[in-house]
Amino acid sequence: MIKNNFPLSSNSSNAAFDIVKFVACILVVCIHTRPFPNYFQPLYRIAVPMFYMISSFLFFTRVKMMSHRKQRQYIIKYIKRSLILYLFYFILLFPTSYVFFYRSWWNLGFPSNILRFIEQFFFSYTFVIPSWYIVSSILGIIIIYYATRCKMKYILPIVAVVLYLFCCLTSNYKSLLPPDFELDYFAGGGIFKPQNSFVVSLIWIYFGYILTVKNYTFSKSMVFILLAALFIEYGLIIHALGVPESQDCYILLPPLCFILFTFVLRLKITSKNGLMMRKMSTIIFCVHHPIATIGKIILLHNGIESGILNFTITISLSILICLVIFMLEKCKFFGWLMYSY
Image: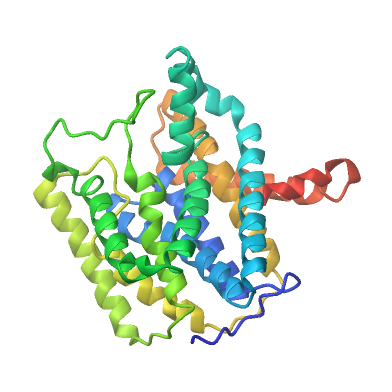
């Protein structure tokens, strides 16, 4: 069994995880603003797996200490809390979502527009970008939880790896598929992208689970070797297949992130600002994309094409939103702002 070096009570902060999540949310902003040359893309892609593995590790660490009845109660609590977060940003970001999604969906007519919304909820996003992560985490946690409690647990790692390789094929390696290859939704129109759905979450959530069961030790050199190999993979993709439309999944990303996370688990860090960083990472993750999109449009309209400027504006405004939320939630009337994180 892995020994958890961090207190997991509701009154304590896992400082190492909080710091990693904060850094990860900055990397997610980099994905959507591209402040640096494209060859940094593989580095940015470490972010989302870290979010998944931290959530999964904490979930299964808590669950394994509970009775079967309390486990079910905790799962319901986890789903409820995640859906409240989803609903909060669904309402907050509705204006931008309407411009980018709902307006075109509405034109599909009934019942196609309703079916499209349902499909997007389960398999993609219904408001700007973050929604797919929230839903995929819920579905992934549920699937891994029940799969590890039946005979399927023996084939689960194989299924997770195969599905992840399929996600690689539909993202970075899509040029290997026929030019007209697309995964259509069952109804309602639109294209299914498994790399932005619960399909891709399974391998990362499984990693988080397995690290609560068994302790793994690797040398630090493995991290640097795999990181270098990841950049080489990216270079080979660009050279052989051209710049992919979607750069979410790399073949070498799972072993790198798995080994990297084992080092995160061994970190012993204390920080008075851990809780604040945890809250900020959630808020920034959820609000940054519309800011980045609108910022890019405004900059391009004024003849400015600068990823670093858009990154700076996006991060600054996102942090400002965090500070405003922290200030207002102290007032009784704005207590509901706590649901933003």
